[in-house]
Image (cartoon, rainbow, N blue to C red; front, side):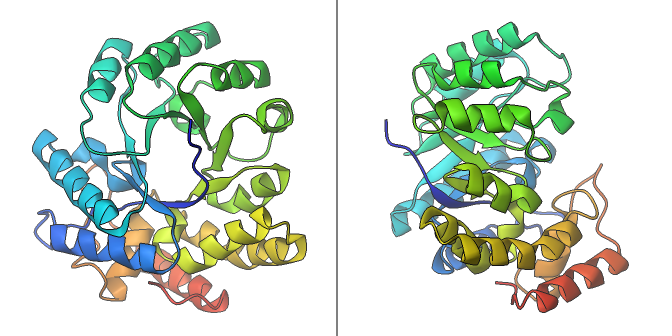
Length: 297
């Protein structure tokens, strides 16, 4: 099984001022982050506001992201599935684009047992046309996973790794990397903790802040993978305030506001229940980018 490493940018979904899809802007943004050093793209992740898109819109977004990745020979990870196993199996099994990985979230809201989580991912992995990555994000799912469960998930056939977004580096994170870090791929999903997780052995990241600073986050990951501890630590510290500022309001509101301020997408529009970022948060993020010596893409 081919493992993925490096920077994967979870794509925003740009909208026009009247709320329609801005597909040309999406393609242009995808090319920009790849030009800046991203390894690949993630389509229809949380940052894309997929729950606010229609079925037809999700298909259009996926098609444009897949087209850019095919043109650039870049790997594409696609998010699919939800909190019902049968529906998730159908959604994952129906994927037809050439993809490098499928990202599926731990079942949310229903709070299954950890054994239920293992059974869920066993079924999804068997149906997936590409290596499966477990999206572990307990602050969204209300289902934290212990270290032993993470290691067991890593051993399921066709489970290639994790997007690890647990809001820090906890005991389960350390146990996963200590026991399975040589045989599974951990991609950090918390922007502010990326440097710490890379130091422990993560192989890359799926980082929303890289929509703004792809070159800097690509360099951060490359430094840790090369064993350049001093460079990796310095970059992590430099980018911390930017990561905090971009998540001052719900993702991707501030990210979109910064990109719109720079004229890189048509508007900062998001769809309800999200509200557009406040001017104060937008200004703070622009200042944080400037202080980190980052020019938004």
